[in-house]
View 1 (tube, rainbow, N blue to C red):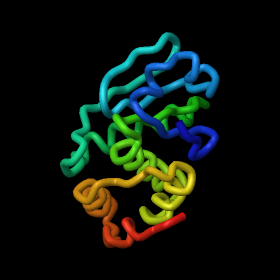
View 2 (cartoon, rainbow, N blue to C red):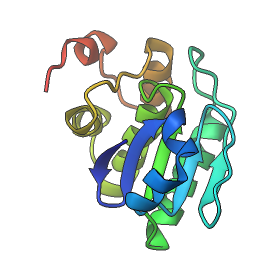
View 3 (spheres, one colour):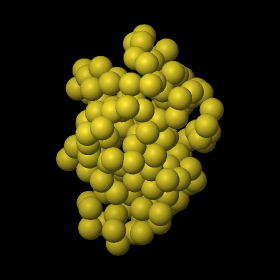
Length: 146
């Protein structure tokens, strides 16, 4: 699990399973994208986001709204998928874009700097670009080194 911002963390499914680690990191909410895991006194939302498929806009909207609502409530949010590579990084990128007004590429760079294994898959990146009306080549994402 890595801290992207004091209110935003990115991780893997295994992070959601370790209640002691969640408590140590003061996680108060989780957006889960691989599997639903319930932990006592931690709010959660599970969204069935497919790993290698284009992102459904309705799921993107719901997930980002959840992250930002939890932030507004003063909660530290963990966004977790299976491996912490594609789906979780995608939702963290979108949350930074919406909360801080960053471009998708700037948001990607912020997430990648804090969580080097972050890498949205091609169809997912194209979905983000389409949703936000930005055109940034996926090849440039692949070439970026923090």
